[in-house]
Length: 461
Image (cartoon, rainbow, N blue to C red; front, side, top):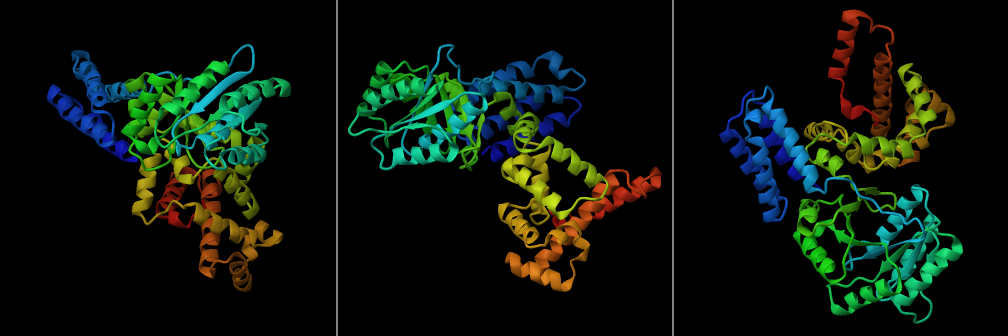
């Protein structure tokens, strides 16, 4: 989502950090480009102006310009101010000491509110809570059925509409149902409209009168840019909101909504949707998001995803076998499946420091980073192998390769490419593990030369 902004800011900051000495003129020239980058990202012009002014006040101070590393100091200032712009400290749902905690979701139709309800339920369950969903949207066709299906697929109880009961009554009954089922979090999926109207606002106010709502969260489509800020302001003025959930943060929007929200309406972003799957949802951490935008990566989120999706014991065993050059095709298949659970490979690499640069270099070399279709094709090839072939891929010769290609719906060239890449990967891992021939200066030089000359597009990763 922030790719364009990240590239522009990266270029500006590179110029700052690349100079041993900075003048006020250098700072002014750089800040003009920062302001233009923010405006192109659809950030509100008042927000962009105030942001740049805060950086200017700190950056032109004598102790900054005359420091030994003025460029790095300014990069640090930009990072701190960007974190503050995104909300400063991370904010999550505040759970009541006397359950249930009632969370009301509101927003326009099409913002992804119903799916977000299920995503939020999964998130609070990971924190040790027991959520119940209330299908309070009686206007959109099949809205309740969609929520019911999401509930069944993820083992959440769902309070469904009964006859012609009105949404405020449904919500009240849902809270009572939560108490009966011993659920300590209730998530109300209220109705949306194509535009804000008085009927919808009256209904939301009535729900708040009937039910003791503890958190009112506004679900906004990040793709709508500045319009999302206008919608948020309208809901805040008419009903009142405690926080925001941004959906479709994985899209190609420019990021203006996320960057303008806190300063425009004074409300924090609590969560963001990063994909269509129910699991693709994360707490919004301003400091981590600022690091991503500035190309510094987001190692903490990457570690958290790994802890959730990767079996530690199995990963350690695989690493040992990898360094010994004893990794099998079945090991690689299990490894790939665990990595895919963490999200698209591009997103995972993007969280690593320098990851975006790696992706850009890969694209220049002809798309060395495989996408989901490439990974699915590799998986199909491995699944078409026999158990013996997965353990001893060296036995796979001409007729076997032809059979595997036919069984996986791929070509013999695809099978050859995967086997060659797997063999190269085994060699690399064995070298990194200190295998034979890597001792001493000459051995290390030989290893580096092999790595340098390797065609990374062949690696099965």
